[in-house]
Length: 146
Image (tube, rainbow, N blue to C red; front, side, top):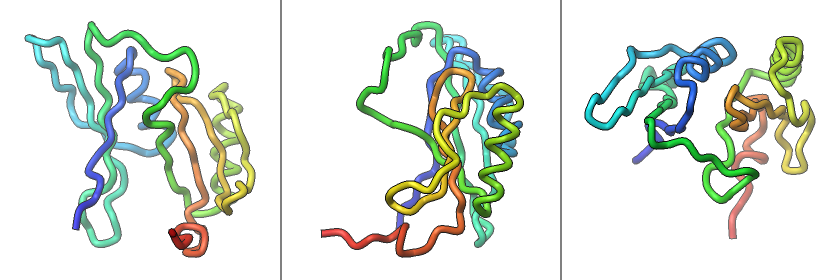
């Protein structure tokens, strides 16, 4: 059986974005990797391990001098990363703390049409970060397919 090991995100401010995910989502960072030949620099942020004690979700932040362009608006490709919090109150509280700290909260908190309770905020580079109440039902998470 496979699982997603990590997702990666190109960023301009490697340390600033790393610090955002450490602060708001209790991540833990490894040391910076640097490839002097290509200029690539990375941090891997680890989040809580799974209930079975396996490696938890990870987010790789990457920066390289020649990767500088970003779309002007939404584009095809990855749309957001999502973090689950225990319940609706936790989503409300994190969204309120983020707003108070001038982190843009661009949607919610609200109940979505497909049954999730969520808010969407932006990281320092404008990437969408969804926070959901993790107490959603199997009915929401496992809608039957065709």
